[in-house]
Image 1 (cartoon, rainbow, N blue to C red):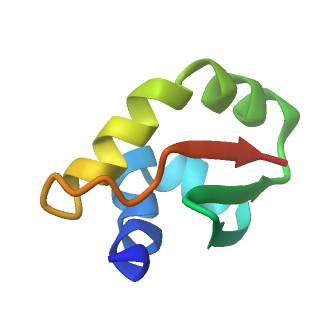
Image 2 (image 1 turned 180 degrees about the vertical axis):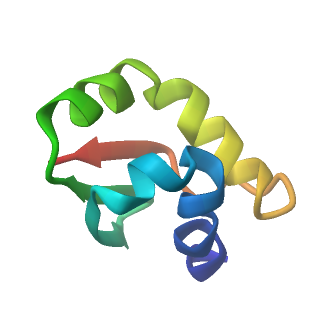
Length: 71
């Protein structure tokens, strides 16, 4: 299920954000994402709750991640 969350990232955030994403991994139910553009990073920080919900729904509604850390 964790692989599904990571694979769903590009689809959930869209192509523009996906281009600025350099790393993705899950540790202790937290998705860690490295974003190289500060403006995109800020936008994602404001949308964390929405992203968590959308990524969990992409796995069939399972609670795979509980938080997102954007670096």
